[in-house]
Length: 283
Image (cartoon, rainbow, N blue to C red):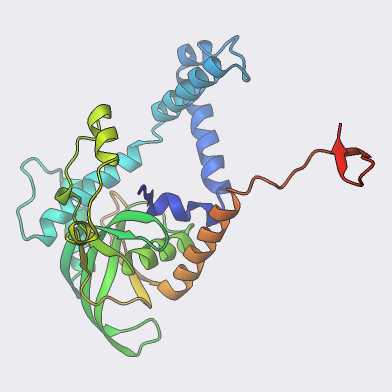
């Protein structure tokens, strides 16, 4: 059965006004800097299906030209470097001074965490979601209220702003904390080969065979998760607690919202007259 990416699943609970406004600004800046791309949009029809695809592509290109994807790419790079750090491996040759400073900050910021699992793929069949969390980390020390706490926590590295979307972060980690590790290599398939993939989806497996792909996570907190905030190029790293009980409530709400989106009877034809047998008929 298909699963929805965890971040996509919970996206419906987020206020997207800030990201939409930011995206619009990048399109304007990119278009101003690249008038040749703007010229390609001249005369295109907003309602024409083919023109809409062209406009979408142009909007993405001008946004990218303004640097919209630069931070995302940098974040991916820092994630990879942090994996080297947590595995005790040397950083790749040629790592820049700025990245070395960020990794030094990462090591100092996470000194009280003992990293365990790295980049683990889990599924939550209850929600129909799947995703990969960054870390599980063992921690012993004060909780958000200053009281002693000890155990294993889901931890996620964020390299962008954490000023917005805190509920989404809490929900994301809450879903991961309730996941089962899924080893998709048990049932290999080349998803880029359409015929092979179509045949694979029709293949039947016994419950015993399917169960081999699932293993339980080691006991992990479902009350608190940890956000590791490492703004790219800042040489600073801070930790933040996120409330997973609140996050799970949000995930459960997201499930209801997504179910409601499948409703098709919200609008009916307007009744113009009644038949002799008393049953309404539409124009």
